Length: 133
Image (tube, helix red, strand yellow):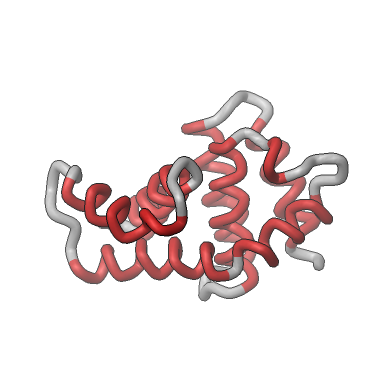
């Protein structure tokens, strides 16, 4: 699985987490990987879980950066798809090993595929501001 595919799976898992209680995290992870058509290799699974768990660990800081970067937008009222994309990208930029430009590009690509027509520009703008904080 490519990094892009693994990142997409991390996004899917983060998106699912937004609809479940934190206490259900282990169960959601198990179901997520069990429902895959093809088994996920251990290296890919480790990357996906690292991205998701890192994002969850820094969620308060990430949401604060989103609020600072998206003036007038409360993360709790944002589109859940856009929010999951933003959270993952900000985690990658600030605490992960992904270069800032790559994280922004990958987030914009996810937005093009899974969100509204306006989302790529919104995601790009918010991440551009967040990268400077």
